[in-house]
Image (cartoon, rainbow, N blue to C red; front, side, top):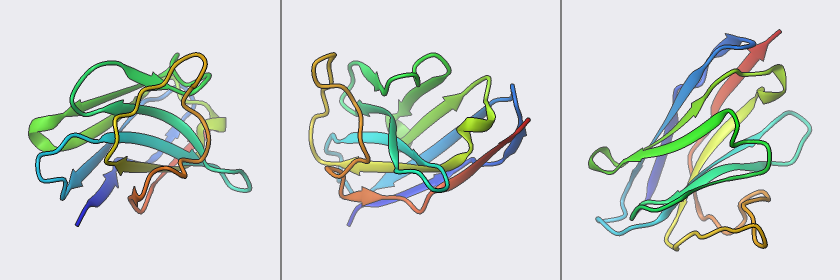
Length: 131
C-alpha cells in the first residue's frame, strides 16, 4: 500500500524560504511519478512541479520554475520542494502526490491541472506567507 506523508509547512514572512519534504513508501522499489500540488482557499488545486523518480528532467507548471525547485533523494524515498522568495500568493495547502507512471511533460503538453491522474496523496502541509 502506497503512503505519502508531507512535512515542512510553516508560516513565514514574504521573501523567506521553505523546504517541503514528502516521504513516499509502498512502491517496492519501482519508479513512479512524484509531484507537488497546492490549493489556496477558494481556488482549485493546481500543479507546482513533478519528476520521474528514475531520473531525468524536472517539470514545472507555468510561473513556478523561477522560485521553486523539486528534487529527490531516492535513498530516503523522499521528495523535496525548495521554495524561495515566497510571496503572500504562495499561501496554500501543499500536497504531495505519487502515481505509477512515467511523467513526461513538454511545451505542447505541460504540467498543469489538479492532478486527477494521481491516485496517492498526502494529507497536505500548510504554507502561510505574510506580507
